[in-house]
Image (cartoon, rainbow over all chains, first blue to last red; front, side, top):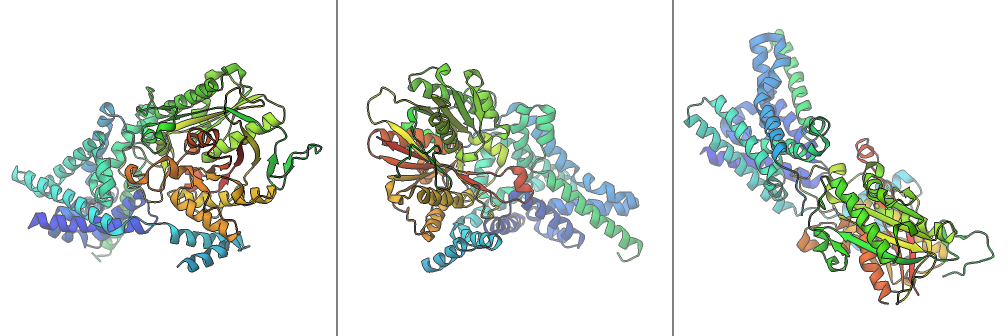
Length: 118
Length: 167
Length: 349
């Protein structure tokens, strides 16, 4: 059922990225960019959304899902509001994710310090 | 095998042309530099990434159960996963998980959150504005830039195609 | 070892080397180390091991300065001297604008030359310090260098809490500081006197490596070049030395060095030693390619190598730490990683 699909698909995406990391000189920062842009492209091609319908969080939680959400937001904004939607949709769709990340991280800095590695 | 290595090394040392020498050296280094044990890493990434996504699915279902619609549940799931990632990063657990899980912790949205929490906590010693403020997106910035930019370009294309009645 | 021609005004020999007429004495040395280093194979040899990576300070950078201050004071004390006996202080570290050094040594009130040689800084400091003494420009010189894992990670790689997986070829920056007191006269202590007989100054060598996670490969050609030039300049064979000691080539870089030298018919496979390999135990400490950073060669030299010389286990060593001279900016702008290795001939007599 859903949990099995989420595990299998999510794990598979991570496994593919791990192979990339181990066999190329790609750094994590670049990998994250590749994932998000792949998501927007596959979203635009109409592939990723049906994939997410089927795989659930297995497709939604990885950064590719974030990219897909960005394009989805832009598309919906264009459908609703026309040209301005191109500028509005991306940040609107990602608002929750980016805000939560920013705000929680900043609050964390009030209470925690970085830790030496051992 | 040793014979091959020796041939390569002499191609480096005897090579007069600097560009060629450097190319030969880079090839040789690639040969002699051991890689991470591939299979174990891939398996660990699969496991950790799979579990995080499964956890996400669990949260989505739970929020639907609490009465949210699908889109709302996804939004709350994002908040929940981000919160957990920032918390685990702050207490030093996420980094340990990442050492084992590699891409399994990098790929999910939790990796994005960790990449923002880490500089926030590290740079506070340089001040709120010039420490945290300036550096908080030092790792995740590219994700936001290229994510927004690519969706903008594709959105533009979509808009144009729409004008021409293609979509 | 060739005779120094004392009638010759110049003490230069060969292409890049010097043989001193009055080889300076090493009359004191110290090693202050961090927790991980203290838990390593050489841990029991360091003067002080600190569990707290901050040393009670507020920031990593201040902590590194404190490491350096302690190393300097300890070495001066062990030499039986006080701060104002030291004519020159030569120090360097990995941080931008050498802030660890400047803030670390400020209160010592010793005339100061700041140096940048990346991880080769101890070799560079010992070289220049020896020149100052043999040239009659100083009677006592202090050479210090430091590095800190947290400060280096923050500057060169990622914030500490970032979840990244280190590749096998990546090294672990050593947290600590090492200091050496050089003098024109022998100290009164028992045991053999340890002198710096000569130096070979490295040239910048760049074989086009762009991988900051594989610094051993970037630096090995520089070590090879300095060793080869040194042996040619002084007309020596590698077995003249009990040990030929590099700083932080690590496991990958050491193998490359031996391969490269073999092409020049120079075999160091039996007496090559690398501080990066000695300072940590890769199995239990998970340090992948080995230790790195200015302190890696410094505290291995002061804690371990000098001890071997004092106890008569070794008589002659060639100490040549290597440094990779890149920065985050140069790397991002697509440049390669040029490296350098400074060699110092250390003999017990």
